[in-house]
Image (cartoon, rainbow, N blue to C red; front, side):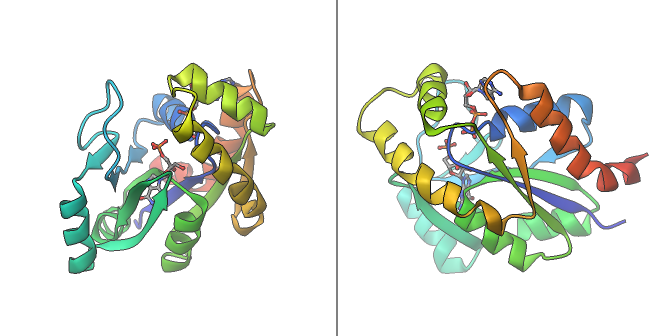
Length: 191
Ligand code: ADP
Ligand code: 5GP
């Protein structure tokens, strides 16, 4: 059986990581596929679990070797997806899930048109996003404002995704249900 990639797309704070954790609680066979970033780990994050954390030089080397299917500057850090990690997952029958920005998500989707589903996770408002990011521990200031500037661009691109999940404040369970429904045809194969 061929695997499938679920690309959770949306602005920082929209709830992608939370939804991935919730999906994995009910469907542990779904595997999170970490991407690579030059951002510093947040407290509690581990190399190879949330991300592969790379120095600028290491990231340059990945680009030079052609290892990255796509990469983006997101809020002054670089983030990229490994081509072979995705190929391996699909060929190996893995149901993989990952979090990616909208531009990267559209690129990955076009590289694996039949083997991936792009899903936009939409919060109810930019104000709610700001509140969530502060609650998550992001400090108000330049970095937070940079994240907020991207929100508008990401919202404008949501129509390019295969599906949209609404993650309203306090309604995580509804968002999870919507997401599981989109994933259902592939989860079915797991038995
Ligand atoms: P992302 O991975 O998209 O950047 P996170 O999953 O880290 O976003 O979520 C950002 C913050 O918002 C977290 O503190 C999370 O607990 C919170 N959050 C996510 N979904 C909801 C929701 N439906 N209602 C309230 N808070 C939420
Ligand atoms: P954070 O720093 O909050 O973990 O992530 C910032 C943003 O980068 C999020 O929107 C996340 O989905 C996105 N992102 C993570 N990995 C990748 C990647 O490999 N490529 C792209 N284009 N975006 C990514």
